[in-house]
Length: 77
Image (cartoon, rainbow, N blue to C red):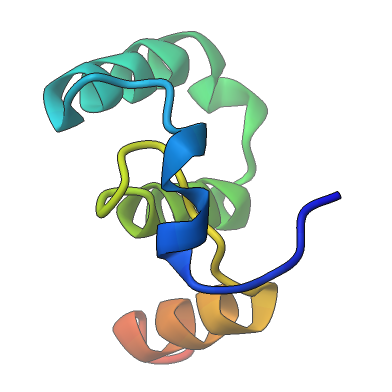
């Protein structure tokens, strides 16, 4: 069972050797699946990817945090 906490506690879950490998994987995934996302889902996915950079591919941000940051960056859109 995973319990929320500091991101450092989850760094061992990273499956990528570099940020470049992670970004390439995300680009390949989006090349195949971008059409399956709504505009809002795509915005949220891209923001989640940004939260996954400190420990490549690992994020533990709360949904509320994601929504807050998206609203701040997009001025409510």
